[in-house]
Image (cartoon, rainbow, N blue to C red):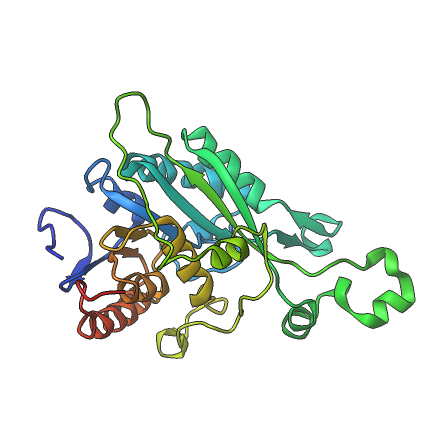
Length: 300
């Protein structure tokens, strides 16, 4: 995939079918052509939940949700511009917890709802929402969440809550009158009815939280929170469902390269942007390795 030498960023690397940019996603997106991206899938910084670095460009460093979305709105406007008319953006997210020591009370913040508001304000249409089931036992084991503890249920179940699923909130850049639309098509052979009946469900019950790239090599001793790569199986579902082979897939928060790994593996091209150098370097190694193994023109 030819690299654009005019893109100003901290660093850029590429291969036959991918290009990765080290820099702020807003600054890099501003330099990409209009209507050039066939599909975008990403997990944004969760408004302070995971803090990956001390850069002022890191949206995860926001003091609160209002500050996060003040920054995010510049990003989403550029995302809308670069998407092809009629094409899809899938944002991986979840509800966020706030604690008594933060606000004096405890509860959940509707982060998916705030993302929907931000994207629709930027002229995207809210297209669909997929609920991705996650085990409350696994969540309890990982987080020791007060509301999931069995002893809390027995003591006072008014504090008990259900586990937190993940979501794809999905948006479409609607094609206006006279705009050409590059349709996403499937055949019975590559997308049988049974698969569609399963994937059309509003709740995906059979995906696995642990199907992730090995993140250990990208960990930085200065990380304030653990990195959290998106599961590969849900990325694959989204890419196969909403893009064509040969399309360019964008991840503006590339991390260690999970979306790019799946995009290349499914015969798509990939553009990734990552601010943190350790993650950028790890992603480039992963993408270069898989890019060297694929034949973009081989049959599916």
